[in-house]
Image 1 (cartoon, rainbow, N blue to C red):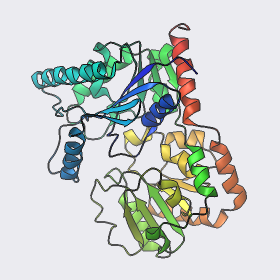
Image 2: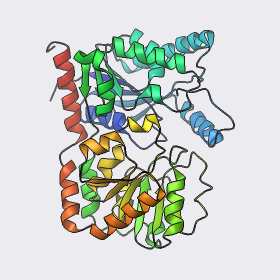
Image 3: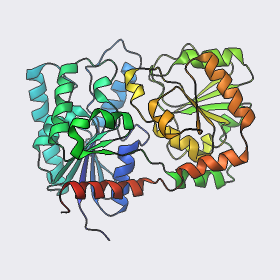
Length: 390
């Protein structure tokens, strides 16, 4: 058993109401190895906008999360939902907010008996608190190019926090090659750290003889599937074009709706099944005929490396995506790229026609063994190297 340590992760989303992304997966891996974990729920990066689609749904979820404050998700793995308002861009309010946030984090650490933890920060809004509180190591996990984040309401404040973390961190983990390339001036501490995949979970679903989920079984095939948050970042013009121009294709969208989906939700061959638990996702995805990623081509998307790419591949699915740089360089021959509705429709038809068992096995083999446990160990090795072997 390795030496037990404590890890604190300042997360980029809410543990209680989101399916686990890469930071949670890494902290779960830490927990499986006997380490104590404190996950701190996101405090956001934007001032709230009441007119934005999904605003009241987000408010409701945040209030429910606040009501939990500090709770164990399981023995040795606690979740803190700090009660702070997203008041960015107003210096006096920011300082008051950060003092209150720091008080809550210190209190939680004291309650849990955590001293000098290894800290991972996944959102720049936490920068001033995370860098000032006691820690034995500081990791900045850049799952996205945060300065390219859409609709930042306090851009200068976030840019300053982002710079602070890059300067003060012991290790900068970059989920895509494009993010890594932009950090050349921090070369000594920068590491390429691609997402992993819970391949055992997806393999178990493929081997299972469990019946199709009832709400999926009634949908005709071929099924073109997507699972993830349904936000305005998705390009619904692509989905609408494909659905309207080939009624035989059935588009299955799984996730919490946090945007305006009126363009597609009434189409007879678009099926919105709502949010499903992470443990259910493989049992839906195994019955897709292809997986899609149709985001709007913003700068933010160009820098990303979607986790669901490997999840689709772990299920053996053919994948059609907008042309993201990471997919072009790291998944040649495994992901079809298309820019618009006509291109997407042609690509979907092509992958459905060409798909066979040999291709499905090759896709699964591509991601086999790329587990979160392995990634966690690699992260510790990188950190040990940076800290001189201590």
